[in-house]
Length: 236
Image (cartoon, rainbow, N blue to C red):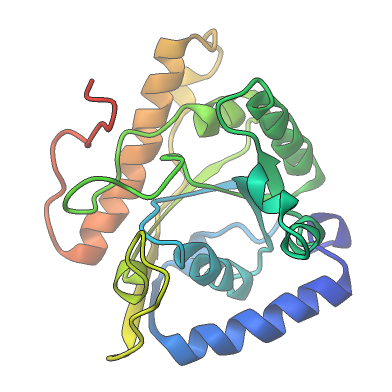
């Protein structure tokens, strides 16, 4: 990893010293297909979202597999004293939700991809609301970024973070020790969408392909059959 694609040595070392021992203490690992994460070049990592804990745990996984994850996060975090300085120093990209500024975050992400960064994306935009915790219908930002940049999309599924810290809870459930399962899929084939105008229908179709790839990895981890139709919080 070049210094262009990661924080300063001080901030990287600080994050690693805090996150890795904490991760080892809280979880056991079931990590599969880490070799499918490209070690160089701009790449989009698209994952399901189950818990406020999974960004940290997935960051550990990606770091151990050779990539510094450049995360897109709520802009509100940047306005919190001390925390805002930390996330900015760790190369996090702010996202202003529900505003025209959201397009700016995608533009920044595209620039980082050209620099060779690994952009870590939650296509759902929030923790899943599916009652059985399967991935929901995704938002189209990740598809737009992939089609504009030409960067490969690597689907990553995980399971177990929701047992450590269920969505909406602030206190982790430390005992018994939880297992964090991760599975990486091959790059999502978006070739049928290339060269097509980025209309909403094209973006929705590409997003559905990305979410299907993530869901397939999650079904493998869970040993269960995924729903035929993903949960849509908008009720469509």
